[in-house]
Length: 216
Length: 35
Image (spheres, rainbow over the protein chains, first blue to last red):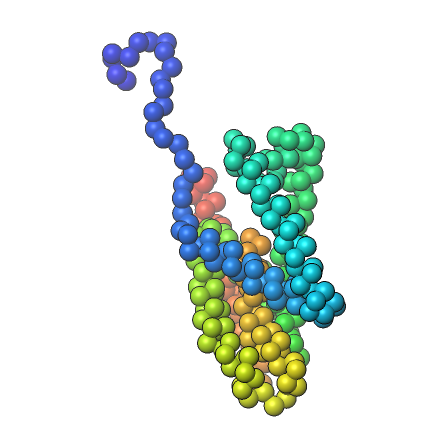
Protein backbone atom coordinates (compact mmCIF):
# COMPACT_ATOMS: atom_id res chain seq x y z
CA UNK A 1 0.00 0.00 0.00
CA UNK A 2 1.11 3.52 -0.73
CA UNK A 3 2.65 4.95 2.45
CA UNK A 4 1.56 8.48 1.54
CA UNK A 5 -2.09 7.43 1.80
CA UNK A 6 -3.63 8.57 5.10
CA UNK A 7 -4.88 5.69 7.23
CA UNK A 8 -8.60 5.23 7.77
CA UNK A 9 -9.49 6.90 4.50
CA UNK A 10 -11.47 4.82 1.99
CA UNK A 11 -9.48 4.15 -1.14
CA UNK A 12 -11.31 5.45 -4.18
CA UNK A 13 -11.48 2.92 -7.00
CA UNK A 14 -10.64 4.96 -10.05
CA UNK A 15 -10.97 2.08 -12.49
CA UNK A 16 -13.76 2.52 -14.97
CA UNK A 17 -16.51 -0.04 -14.58
CA UNK A 18 -18.49 -1.25 -17.56
CA UNK A 19 -20.20 -4.32 -18.92
CA UNK A 20 -17.93 -6.48 -21.03
CA UNK A 21 -18.82 -6.10 -24.67
CA UNK A 22 -18.62 -9.35 -26.58
CA UNK A 23 -21.08 -8.81 -29.41
CA UNK A 24 -20.61 -6.75 -32.54
CA UNK A 25 -23.24 -4.82 -34.48
CA UNK A 26 -23.63 -7.69 -36.94
CA UNK A 27 -24.66 -10.03 -34.14
CA UNK A 28 -27.38 -7.63 -33.09
CA UNK A 29 -28.42 -7.31 -36.73
CA UNK A 30 -28.67 -11.10 -37.04
CA UNK A 31 -30.70 -11.30 -33.85
CA UNK A 32 -33.17 -8.64 -34.92
CA UNK A 33 -33.53 -9.79 -38.51
CA UNK A 34 -33.79 -13.41 -37.42
CA UNK A 35 -36.69 -12.63 -35.13
CA UNK A 36 -38.48 -10.72 -37.89
CA UNK A 37 -37.98 -13.48 -40.44
CA UNK A 38 -39.29 -16.07 -38.05
CA UNK A 39 -42.27 -13.90 -37.25
CA UNK A 40 -43.06 -13.90 -40.94
CA UNK A 41 -43.00 -17.64 -41.10
CA UNK A 42 -44.58 -18.46 -37.75
CA UNK A 43 -47.14 -15.73 -37.31
CA UNK A 44 -47.84 -13.33 -40.13
CA UNK A 45 -48.41 -16.03 -42.74
CA UNK A 46 -51.30 -17.37 -40.70
CA UNK A 47 -53.00 -13.98 -40.68
CA UNK A 48 -53.21 -14.06 -44.48
CA UNK A 49 -54.92 -17.45 -44.31
CA UNK A 50 -57.37 -16.29 -41.64
CA UNK A 51 -58.24 -12.77 -42.70
CA UNK A 52 -57.03 -12.38 -46.27
CA UNK A 53 -54.46 -9.88 -47.50
CA UNK A 54 -56.44 -6.82 -46.45
CA UNK A 55 -57.20 -8.15 -42.97
CA UNK A 56 -53.57 -9.09 -42.59
CA UNK A 57 -52.27 -5.65 -43.54
CA UNK A 58 -54.75 -3.96 -41.17
CA UNK A 59 -53.62 -6.27 -38.36
CA UNK A 60 -49.98 -5.53 -39.21
CA UNK A 61 -50.61 -1.78 -39.01
CA UNK A 62 -52.32 -2.05 -35.63
CA UNK A 63 -49.61 -4.30 -34.23
CA UNK A 64 -46.99 -2.01 -35.74
CA UNK A 65 -48.42 1.01 -33.93
CA UNK A 66 -48.53 -0.94 -30.68
CA UNK A 67 -44.99 -2.11 -31.23
CA UNK A 68 -43.73 1.40 -31.90
CA UNK A 69 -45.38 2.47 -28.64
CA UNK A 70 -43.65 -0.37 -26.83
CA UNK A 71 -40.27 0.52 -28.31
CA UNK A 72 -40.66 4.20 -27.40
CA UNK A 73 -41.78 3.28 -23.90
CA UNK A 74 -38.84 0.95 -23.39
CA UNK A 75 -36.39 3.51 -24.77
CA UNK A 76 -37.76 6.24 -22.56
CA UNK A 77 -37.90 4.24 -19.37
CA UNK A 78 -34.83 2.11 -20.00
CA UNK A 79 -32.59 5.15 -20.25
CA UNK A 80 -33.50 6.37 -16.75
CA UNK A 81 -33.26 3.02 -14.92
CA UNK A 82 -29.90 2.59 -13.24
CA UNK A 83 -30.10 -1.17 -13.66
CA UNK A 84 -29.75 -3.67 -16.50
CA UNK A 85 -32.74 -5.94 -16.10
CA UNK A 86 -35.14 -5.22 -18.91
CA UNK A 87 -38.82 -5.36 -18.09
CA UNK A 88 -38.10 -6.91 -14.73
CA UNK A 89 -36.10 -3.86 -13.62
CA UNK A 90 -38.72 -1.52 -15.04
CA UNK A 91 -41.47 -3.22 -13.04
CA UNK A 92 -39.28 -3.14 -9.94
CA UNK A 93 -38.75 0.61 -10.13
CA UNK A 94 -42.22 1.59 -11.32
CA UNK A 95 -44.57 -0.87 -9.62
CA UNK A 96 -42.67 -2.51 -6.77
CA UNK A 97 -41.19 -5.88 -5.86
CA UNK A 98 -44.37 -7.97 -6.20
CA UNK A 99 -45.01 -6.76 -9.74
CA UNK A 100 -41.34 -7.32 -10.54
CA UNK A 101 -41.57 -10.88 -9.23
CA UNK A 102 -44.61 -11.52 -11.42
CA UNK A 103 -42.96 -10.01 -14.48
CA UNK A 104 -39.82 -12.10 -13.87
CA UNK A 105 -41.89 -15.25 -13.41
CA UNK A 106 -43.85 -14.62 -16.60
CA UNK A 107 -40.64 -13.97 -18.53
CA UNK A 108 -39.24 -17.29 -17.36
CA UNK A 109 -42.47 -19.05 -18.36
CA UNK A 110 -42.40 -17.31 -21.72
CA UNK A 111 -38.86 -18.35 -22.56
CA UNK A 112 -39.21 -21.90 -21.28
CA UNK A 113 -42.44 -22.48 -23.19
CA UNK A 114 -41.07 -20.77 -26.28
CA UNK A 115 -38.14 -23.17 -26.39
CA UNK A 116 -40.38 -26.19 -25.84
CA UNK A 117 -42.70 -25.04 -28.63
CA UNK A 118 -39.79 -24.31 -30.96
CA UNK A 119 -38.24 -27.71 -30.47
CA UNK A 120 -41.60 -29.35 -31.22
CA UNK A 121 -42.02 -27.21 -34.33
CA UNK A 122 -38.61 -28.27 -35.63
CA UNK A 123 -39.68 -31.91 -35.27
CA UNK A 124 -43.03 -31.27 -36.92
CA UNK A 125 -41.50 -29.43 -39.88
CA UNK A 126 -39.00 -32.21 -40.47
CA UNK A 127 -41.79 -34.76 -40.31
CA UNK A 128 -43.70 -32.77 -42.91
CA UNK A 129 -40.79 -33.31 -45.32
CA UNK A 130 -41.28 -37.06 -45.04
CA UNK A 131 -43.48 -39.00 -42.56
CA UNK A 132 -40.70 -41.54 -42.07
CA UNK A 133 -38.65 -38.96 -40.23
CA UNK A 134 -39.15 -39.34 -36.48
CA UNK A 135 -39.70 -36.06 -34.68
CA UNK A 136 -38.52 -37.21 -31.23
CA UNK A 137 -34.76 -37.50 -31.94
CA UNK A 138 -34.77 -34.12 -33.68
CA UNK A 139 -36.69 -32.48 -30.84
CA UNK A 140 -34.18 -33.82 -28.32
CA UNK A 141 -31.27 -32.92 -30.60
CA UNK A 142 -32.59 -29.36 -30.93
CA UNK A 143 -32.78 -28.96 -27.18
CA UNK A 144 -29.31 -30.45 -26.65
CA UNK A 145 -27.69 -28.33 -29.38
CA UNK A 146 -29.29 -25.19 -27.99
CA UNK A 147 -28.27 -26.04 -24.46
CA UNK A 148 -24.71 -26.63 -25.63
CA UNK A 149 -24.60 -23.42 -27.66
CA UNK A 150 -25.86 -21.37 -24.76
CA UNK A 151 -23.53 -23.15 -22.40
CA UNK A 152 -20.67 -21.98 -24.61
CA UNK A 153 -21.91 -18.44 -24.25
CA UNK A 154 -23.77 -15.71 -26.03
CA UNK A 155 -20.96 -15.14 -28.52
CA UNK A 156 -21.11 -18.71 -29.80
CA UNK A 157 -24.90 -18.59 -29.95
CA UNK A 158 -25.09 -15.39 -31.90
CA UNK A 159 -22.21 -16.28 -34.21
CA UNK A 160 -24.16 -19.40 -35.15
CA UNK A 161 -27.23 -17.20 -35.50
CA UNK A 162 -25.32 -14.82 -37.74
CA UNK A 163 -24.08 -17.63 -40.00
CA UNK A 164 -27.61 -18.97 -40.36
CA UNK A 165 -28.85 -15.47 -41.07
CA UNK A 166 -26.36 -14.93 -43.87
CA UNK A 167 -27.12 -18.31 -45.41
CA UNK A 168 -30.84 -17.72 -45.11
CA UNK A 169 -30.63 -14.30 -46.72
CA UNK A 170 -28.41 -15.39 -49.55
CA UNK A 171 -30.82 -18.23 -50.38
CA UNK A 172 -33.81 -15.93 -50.29
CA UNK A 173 -32.05 -13.33 -52.41
CA UNK A 174 -31.03 -15.90 -54.99
CA UNK A 175 -34.40 -17.60 -55.16
CA UNK A 176 -36.70 -14.61 -54.88
CA UNK A 177 -36.82 -13.72 -58.61
CA UNK A 178 -37.55 -17.34 -59.53
CA UNK A 179 -40.16 -17.65 -56.81
CA UNK A 180 -42.00 -14.55 -57.95
CA UNK A 181 -41.87 -15.57 -61.58
CA UNK A 182 -43.01 -19.07 -60.70
CA UNK A 183 -40.42 -20.44 -63.08
CA UNK A 184 -39.01 -23.03 -60.73
CA UNK A 185 -39.90 -26.61 -61.51
CA UNK A 186 -42.69 -27.43 -59.08
CA UNK A 187 -45.03 -29.69 -60.99
CA UNK A 188 -46.66 -31.11 -57.86
CA UNK A 189 -47.49 -27.75 -56.36
CA UNK A 190 -50.44 -25.71 -57.66
CA UNK A 191 -49.32 -22.39 -59.08
CA UNK A 192 -51.29 -20.34 -56.53
CA UNK A 193 -49.61 -22.12 -53.61
CA UNK A 194 -46.15 -22.26 -55.07
CA UNK A 195 -44.69 -19.21 -53.42
CA UNK A 196 -45.82 -20.09 -49.91
CA UNK A 197 -44.96 -23.74 -50.37
CA UNK A 198 -41.45 -23.02 -51.53
CA UNK A 199 -40.81 -20.55 -48.78
CA UNK A 200 -42.14 -22.97 -46.21
CA UNK A 201 -40.05 -25.86 -47.36
CA UNK A 202 -36.78 -24.11 -47.92
CA UNK A 203 -36.80 -21.26 -45.48
CA UNK A 204 -39.09 -22.54 -42.80
CA UNK A 205 -36.58 -24.83 -41.19
CA UNK A 206 -33.96 -22.11 -41.03
CA UNK A 207 -36.53 -19.61 -39.87
CA UNK A 208 -37.41 -21.85 -36.97
CA UNK A 209 -33.77 -22.10 -36.10
CA UNK A 210 -33.69 -18.34 -35.96
CA UNK A 211 -36.65 -18.40 -33.66
CA UNK A 212 -35.10 -21.05 -31.48
CA UNK A 213 -31.84 -19.15 -31.19
CA UNK A 214 -33.57 -15.82 -30.74
CA UNK A 215 -35.58 -17.19 -27.88
CA UNK A 216 -32.39 -17.74 -26.00
CA UNK B 1 -32.48 -49.16 -45.07
CA UNK B 2 -33.93 -45.89 -46.33
CA UNK B 3 -32.24 -42.52 -46.14
CA UNK B 4 -34.81 -41.43 -43.54
CA UNK B 5 -33.89 -44.25 -41.21
CA UNK B 6 -30.25 -43.25 -41.51
CA UNK B 7 -31.26 -39.65 -40.77
CA UNK B 8 -33.18 -40.74 -37.67
CA UNK B 9 -30.24 -42.73 -36.37
CA UNK B 10 -28.00 -39.80 -37.20
CA UNK B 11 -30.16 -37.56 -35.04
CA UNK B 12 -29.93 -40.02 -32.15
CA UNK B 13 -26.17 -40.11 -32.66
CA UNK B 14 -26.13 -36.32 -32.60
CA UNK B 15 -28.06 -36.41 -29.34
CA UNK B 16 -25.42 -38.71 -27.85
CA UNK B 17 -22.58 -36.48 -29.09
CA UNK B 18 -24.07 -33.28 -27.68
CA UNK B 19 -25.05 -34.96 -24.41
CA UNK B 20 -21.42 -36.12 -24.13
CA UNK B 21 -20.07 -32.64 -24.91
CA UNK B 22 -22.36 -31.09 -22.33
CA UNK B 23 -21.44 -33.65 -19.70
CA UNK B 24 -17.70 -33.25 -20.31
CA UNK B 25 -17.91 -29.48 -20.18
CA UNK B 26 -20.07 -29.56 -17.08
CA UNK B 27 -17.70 -31.92 -15.24
CA UNK B 28 -14.69 -29.80 -16.25
CA UNK B 29 -16.30 -26.60 -15.01
CA UNK B 30 -17.47 -28.18 -11.76
CA UNK B 31 -14.00 -29.62 -11.07
CA UNK B 32 -12.44 -26.22 -11.71
CA UNK B 33 -14.96 -24.49 -9.47
CA UNK B 34 -14.34 -26.82 -6.55
CA UNK B 35 -10.59 -26.64 -6.97
